[in-house]
Length: 174
Ligand code: CUA
Image (cartoon, rainbow, N blue to C red; front, side, top):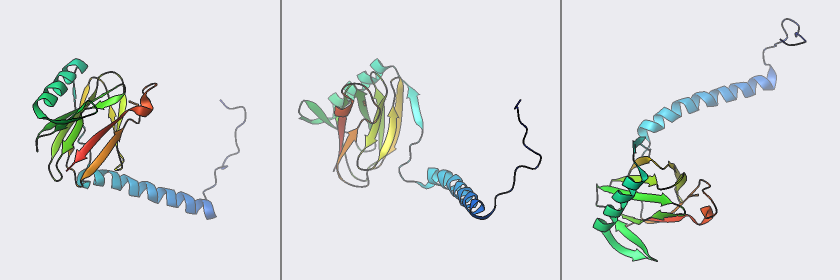
């Protein structure tokens, strides 16, 4: 209980500028409330929210198998792996790298599985500004269709220790 009760009728309805700003904020709330579900259904690169439980050792085994079957090159000891068009690709995050380098074709659709071997990392695809959480124990599936070609760096955007700043990877689109 408060020690002082305000007098009855203390709350006055907004007037003048206050009324204008409250009105603008309310309009923006309504626009955003409509835009978010709209973008979920009509946006072109939205996450599907598809994820599965997976033990880090099992996910690592899938990555190893994927690399062995689809490796097309190597750069500084990191394999370059081409995902079969329409197929499944795997990307493993760990302290402090993304493994392997992925190669995709423009206009093809892929299912990209992302998980972590140790702790929480962030998958941030540049310069497109696509950001996803990468968690150990979860296979996060992204359905992606590259709409432009080039080299797209991946940076980790969750602080994950002393080597966080050096945790980068790459997706190459032809
Ligand atoms: Cu991984 Cu920061």
